[in-house]
Image (cartoon, rainbow, N blue to C red):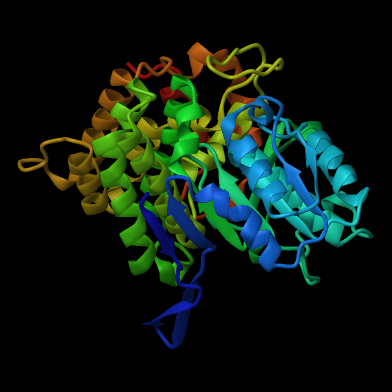
Length: 431
């Protein structure tokens, strides 16, 4: 068994001179432990923390699969008392967050453990936050303008994340995303206080992922890497020399291993590599941010009507997060390329395009074509029209994107509502 402890940097400070002002950027991430079978250590970690009553959160499908069994076996072996909440909703809503929060408040839990994909980890973050702040109203910590965006001033309980998908990177970040149903739009809570104290990245867990879940999770990694690498530069609160390293490396891994990981669920090398790429891209975007693909994805997921996602055991209509993000990527990167063409060309080259004779002004077209080729090979639905949208829905999609300023303002190119309309229109069909 290979075992790696990646004790990631918690305070690398970058400084640059901008006019008369000094601009700082501090990089931070959770500690990450990686290796086949490393989950068996979680009980020892909890014992070392002095945990007396642990809240384990997962979803109904995973509750019957090996990742959860491995965690509970380790807890039992180490004599750790726990209760399981297995009602996490895939693509959580404000209502499903509140249900998990009620469970977290129902007992005196002193440590939280999340076993699952981004939906589970994000739900557990929110449950921990509000159980630790029992007097807070739900919208207090939710990002403005939907919520009040109040800072988290109190302490939260330790949280250990055991990711089972290779996608969200939620084990590295202080972000929890959900659908706010009254507005039919995704929003979230963002605070470094939410960041897990430890991410246990066990590649054996990715073998439980169905093919389409592996694909859609991988598309989230792809867009995390591309968006953070092309975000505004760090003196404007975006990409920086350290996040660039993680984002670029994640993109290389995606290009090399993602197709293999999707096509063969038992290809442990490919699935392990994508699991690490998810961590790398998570550290990248956790410090640089994402921009238009993610900002536009929230209403795509939030306004879903009837689309049934293959490979997901859910009863509600669903456009999986990674799919909602990647469907706009050809249009988005064609739009943003004029602001940093070299980075767009480099990304296209990593994804397999020949860029030797390409002019800078064609960088967007080349990257868009490389993305279309990549998506076509992985049999991605043919644009927004294939998941139930038409041109009549564009005003609602634009309206749902406008409040996502926390991410859209990191786009390297400024954009109007008319620009967003054109990007949605260009994303109706991909091929």
